[in-house]
Length: 118
Length: 115
Image (cartoon, rainbow over the protein chains, first blue to last red):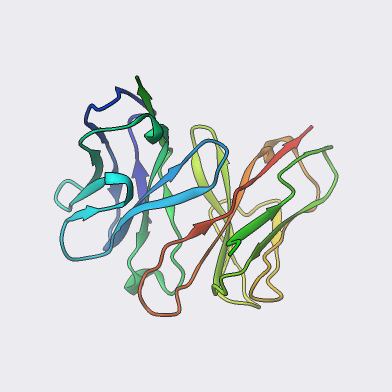
């Protein structure tokens, strides 16, 4: 089974400052990793994903994440945040296709609220 | 395209009553999912469907049922609602037929309150 831990429930940051949202996972098999963003009163939208290959993944809106297998982490970073980045961010994991079959059943973390202040 | 639509947007329901949450996608995705979102717990998978005619249980299936009569629709039914089913419900879909891992697309959600 897989699990995801997002230790920070809320991260306050000033506009134009850098930010890192932490995500650690647990799995006995190879996994795919995802970051989703949820703006207020909306559904989730994919920011970026790691399937294989380069461990540094770039996503939309200037976000990037680095897969670290030895530390079982997939932290999300942005060098300079904007007010519009205020949202809930969810890290998610799924067993790779070889182990999980055809359906990508996601296991989500509990979310981190990024609160950007002017 | 609309993507995924959910109805109703919100609902207040008396305990013991039944209700069906509707979900329709226009992307011809083979796989569909129902999640519930609760504060401090993130999103948890209730039921899923790999393809029309098949369904499977997720992490928290008790008290819920689903059907998948066709590709586009994936309704979620609460046969006898209880207050612990108060939550925001999200429907999602993905196309996993290509063999590569594709993202899940989410609907706008249904906010359900059971009193």
